[in-house]
Image 1 (cartoon, rainbow, N blue to C red):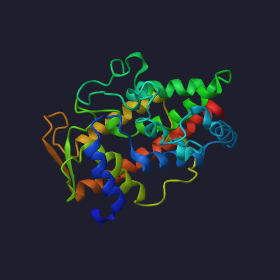
Image 2: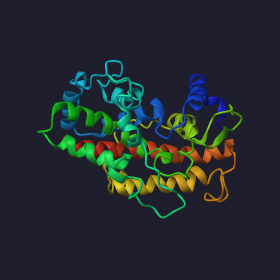
Image 3: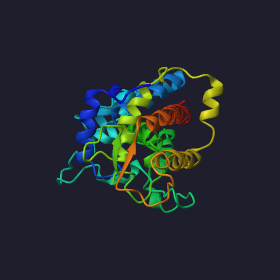
Length: 291
């Protein structure tokens, strides 16, 4: 049986730092999850799409974020998180307007609906659709298209972290203290478990996820649209994220939840599939926009 000790020491240290510093549901999938999704997408896009992406990312200077690189798809996958602390000329966060674009607060205990969560387009699924439209528009300013590309690469990853798609009025699980088997620092929470510890375990368990997938697999996983994928990720939040730590996902959440080793083992294939879905669906959207 795989042990909790498989978690990399650097990642455990990062978990402590992240849990202590994050109080918002916009904290996203950490670097490893986003990078893997971008790499899966890059392995499955059409050659002409790859060329178009490289041409756009060569113009990363237009973003005016020299401390946050976006020269490759892997770098671009974490750009939207990297720029969060950047200050504008007025001293305020320069990308504060994008805070709500990383998630959508859809209750897992009410019928699925994006109407309230995506009011005025301020949610992850609406921004994915917007970014695809901007990339398709060859007359759009180059800066807008570069920005749309780097946001899109990141946001598709966010959508496939279930706690960015469904929650229980708990800031996407950030308010739920968690123990990951025997690892239980005081401020580790359910969101950071799915962002980092479980994502790392899932990605490194079994065969590598970054490869060219068979056409039939791509067709099956990429069926539907952004709304369908939102509903699916929301359902995963209900059926796996919360149901794995509570008998009734919609009952009051305990002060602390525990993911023991047996629970973690059952969640690994769920988390692996979410990463695969994110990568292949990102490839589909990039092909549609640039291929």
